[in-house]
Length: 378
Image (tube, rainbow, N blue to C red; front, side, top):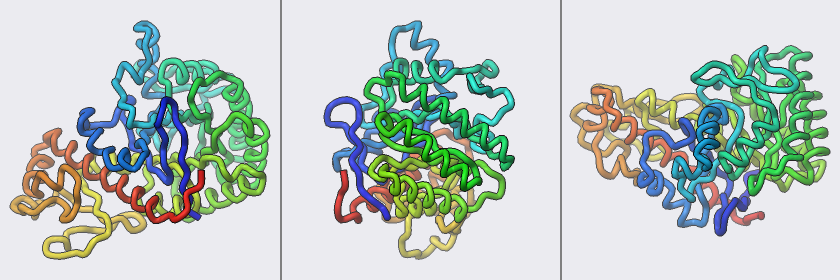
């Protein structure tokens, strides 16, 4: 069942209200947007007393941390990350969603990350130190690898490493960051159960929550399979007294329909690259609304989302707002014809406007979901 939590964050008067979706980032910042546009995008959530979350892959900050050390500053200050953004740092890179940290170069002592200058091996201690001192995240996912393999030995090895690395993360001084333990085990139900029990034994006192991992990285994986893994993990956490802690899902490119379904089943924080992938393909997300006129050009994708393909030439002379009734900056100030022109001419402004719209829709959907939950639980 969907629930409403208030997650306290670093600093005064900063909290994240759930269910919440995390915005994707590129090199640690929200793509395409200036600080002013990010502030406008977050305004309604902030007015309700919540910051907006953003998922930051550690691999994309790995080279930046070296620069931060030389400058004697942290990434949050260097990139001028606004206070209305909650930084959630994890290992997985969304640009490698189907091959995230899956490499034979990993070992029990370190994990290999892909950078612009080749692969770099990082130990759990280095990860915690970089994150706590150089990034200063609000929420830190533990150091853990994820595998799409169905080989039982490979899954068991991944689980054993994650448990070992969780001990290191739990013992490290993370400052004001909330540690979230990673739950792995692939498609092996028994292994996942054993991993949950082992993780809870280690992290019961030190972790603020648990991340259900290894979703959206296996070939031909279905939404129903992901939902089953999530439901069983939540049920087990509740049965051993950890049901009141944060539940996080970080998984590839899950669409809005699936994210809302997962939130309805009790997931608190969800991360997806969906709004960014839609933007790159020139598509605009449409929240449920009556169709009229040229609305027939909308088409359903995935498990129920509706999108408008702004590459469609039929919009070249359409002077209506991109999505009628939408209150985002792009729809209030620009027409379909103009946005089609920008996309067709490959102008960066086109992607900026599309991302504003897609991110606005994602945040609005979760804001409406929160407002529909009668009794908050803290």
